[in-house]
Image (tube, rainbow over the protein chains, first blue to last red):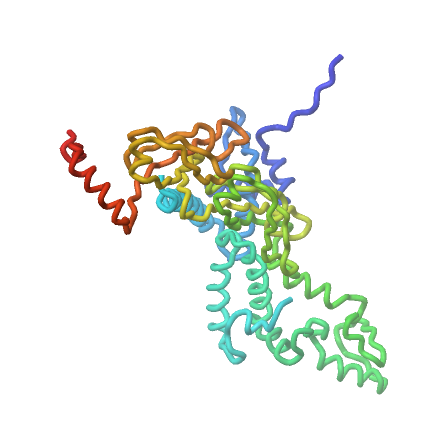
Length: 102
Length: 316
């Protein structure tokens, strides 16, 4: 009989995410309701998260604890930070094209 | 713990609570590790948070003013305790809610009393040194730092020492740069980013490659363009000329009849690529004339001018 290594699940359940982040599952569900965390819902209504969700949760926690932002405002901050990141990347790319010629 | 809390926040010692809060809010927004990816920002943020934790509370602020940086070693009810100690000594008892307080003749500041470690208590209250007030363990943020390389360094790769500000002063990394990195490429140093609080994991540190603009080499992705100056007769008659490239000097055959701007491609001689085809090296011909021709040179040019019917402005 062949032995197979356990494959790491590509998606995380609410319980798994709650355990790995140390947060209450209800808080995780609230993050989804506030649209801070992207989640997909399967046929049974169970929520599933991408493998990168713990990184986002950590960011939410840091913003919440470090700047006393409420969770509602964090949604906006996350969006703006993402946009700034995209813009800065574009700016860098176009500046690199200008300075190094081509 | 670095520096005076007032200096950390940049306020005077008699600043009003509003001024303290204003200074803190501004600094916290500037140095929050999710807003500021600079590796030094996190440390600054923690310092600022710690300073604010202390100065925002009137009672702690008073104690800080009075006892200085070691104020946490001094129990909160210092004055009460001193008088209580005196009362104990004189045989009196402290009429406080039936709690038995174990204080001897000498007051142990470090230990606190009743078996409670004051430092522990306050450390927990102020979120310790983590800078995150309240909450459980939170993983650290990713950080970014720029790594400036010359075109040659990017071409060759190799080792490079990188020194960055860190939680315990400067930290130095020996980074291996793969040959042929391009501008904007990120080198990941796992677990070297912002520290997590509690036992949570640290973030990653990303070094972003910036290639310094170079006088000789122009980069476009992995393609490198280099100018090669040639004399008018080399350009007209063809010649083999040495060209310096990031990888060293190469001989390039300039075909006869090359005008300025002609690009000669040296396939695969651009930036190496560990995961695919390397870039090309383009050699661009630039015709140079002697700035101060000798009499003989002038004479020969004049003869050429008289004999030649070539007019580049009349072509098409």
